[in-house]
Amino acid sequence: EERTPKNFLEEIIEKDLKEGRQESVLTRFPPEPNGYLHIGHAKSISVNFGLADQYGGETNLRFDDTNPVTETIEYVENIKHDVRWLGYEWARELYASNYFEDLFGFAITLIRKGLAYVDDSSSEEIAAAKGTPTRPGTNSPYRDRSPEENEDLFRRMRDGEFPEGTRTLRAKIDMASPNMLMRDPVIYRIKHAPHHRTGDKWCIYPTYDMAHGQSDAIEKITHSICTLEFMPHRELYDWFIEKLELFPSRQYEFARLNMSYTIMSKRRLLRLVEENYVDGWDDPRMPTISGLRRRGYTPEAIRNFCTRIGVAKRDNLIDVSLLEFCAREHLNKISLRRMVVFDPIKLVITNWPEGQVEQLVSENNPEDDAAGNRMIPFSGELYIERGDFMEDPPRKFFRLGPGRSVRLKSAFIVTCDDFVKDEDGNVTEVHCRYHPDSRSGSDTSGIKAKGTLHWVSIPHAHKIEVREYDRLFDAENPVDEAAKAAKAEESGKAKEAGKAKEAGKAKEAGKAENAVKAENAGKSKNSGKAAEDTHAGKPSNPGAAGS
Ligand code: ATP
Ligand code: MG
Ligand code: MG
Image (cartoon, rainbow, N blue to C red; front, top):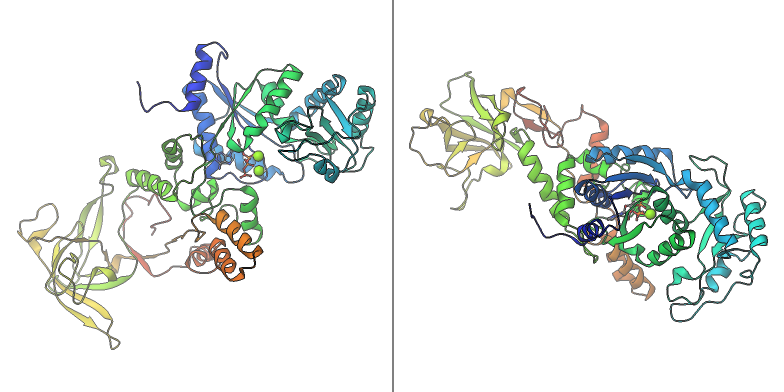
């Protein structure tokens, strides 16, 4: 069945399969375990697992754990949990650190072929000799060491003979290449740091470029999909595969997901956590998978969002409201409805028989017949929403006011006769008459009521806690705002800078944080909100209702 037009990755894969360049599809999702997964990773997961699934292939989960300093087991475990929660199952769980011995072997091969050398320059000296995009760099004084000397030095680097920063291994390519990454890139560094998997076995670690493509080739990944910023790395990726004569994995790039009113870099998210702007990686306002989960998002909603935004070749900013729409769309299908009054005002039914309680029938989910019905107790004293009553309403106000009639959801039509105010002029009670022949489902009253109000019966209501979260940032594009602020500051416009910075900063106080605090304080705390009494089923979205 032909659905939406194919995206460029689908076109590439189909061509590869058709022309026999690849026999099957093997992709990988390669997180660095230095933080929790965020919605951007969900996009990458959806692309990698989705394409493999679509073409009968498989996906590896590969931890890109080549930087011992920032990576932990806790991150590894949470990443696995989040991928599974999103609904994906990987074919193999792998670690770049498993390939340290192979990668070391590849480095020796390059050295023996005269394609890598040990450089004694400091990182500052290396940077200074790199040149600029328009001016070629200069060769390192160590560039012409013999393969024998290089191999001896490199083995001694591995044996721990040299302090950090004193030597690196560099690929010997071209210091005049228009691609800065091809100007003899560093491929191994000395780091006397224990690794969360290999312990203190290694004190030299491969760089991203040395590790990533070769790990792909070792695993025989057919399509190595990454984000646009890796485009300049592709030349180097191909260079290693060619020189080392490895499996021809190919790199393809798509635009990373950027979303409004949030940030998506693990480094920056970590700052929010460490500097206590948020409650943790899973704070419900965070764009992390664990934060979205805690906020009530479903995996289906997130997957649907990822499909809907598609794969782009150019950077763009996706409106967060699209993600929110996807959540609402799915919750609307699966959630059991419950009536909750947030800001209650008392409604008295003056002609209701004293003490009488009636059980009314209401559907659990109008979108889903299988969700069935529930009984709701109705009495002569109800709560309605304060905003659903106006003392002197305009004509188009279809809720309650003196002389106006409304339907109470799943119950009766009521007509307002009177109201009571306290000495400050606040309405405290609304007095209504109900129409006994207007019962929902068997209404013979002939009365037209334009509005329907939700309500709860006061003697049957439960106080509940409702957690409402706001956006974490005021600025639509916080990173841009922060950059603008930095620039403004530099040019001496201190006033403007302060403003922009403020906007880009996480909101510290206010509603959102109080909500988080309330949550920490535990379930005993309630915020005066009233929910209907029903035990017909448990609410499926604990963020919005409970009893
Ligand atoms: P960050 O900038 O958040 O640190 P990263 O790219 O360094 O992200 P990794 O753990 O290395 O994080 O990412 C794993 C995979 O997820 C990579 O293939 C990366 O390209 C992809 N990815 C990360 N962020 C996004 C995003 N916003 N949109 C799409 N893919 C992303
Ligand atoms: Mg990365
Ligand atoms: Mg990173």
